[in-house]
Image (cartoon, helix red, strand yellow):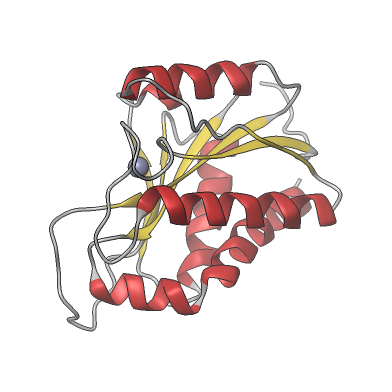
Length: 191
Ligand SMILES: [Zn+2]
């Protein structure tokens, strides 16, 4: 096995098309497409401040769900980088305020190595804000996770349709972006 190298170059993108277009994300207390784009931009700004090269591979002109995913993967694969990061928000079914945040999770094709290690650190840092830590989950059916030629992770920040998650998130937007970047810096320090 190749020794893990510090992350110095990554891509980041917001999932889905822009809000209002075909293939946009889910929307309830929060609008997934809009919020994912905000977090994506903040994460990129903070990564660059910390001397990590970050490319924005967000797609706003997809013609279908598949076209969006294909375009995202093409953009990612065209970059010289070590990791691809996708920002999403989760949804289940509308849940009113019940003092229980549904929480944060990271999806990976395979939790071995960097995906699981960094994924766990991201969950930990975001849950420090107050979100439930749902942990790293394996998912072998997601187009994005299967079609980049570097390790890829997909962050589900929190639930757009859980009122408690939405409240906490709106108060801590900046902290969510900072938590993701802190996790990457912490990961680098373990190598
Ligand atoms: Zn999504």
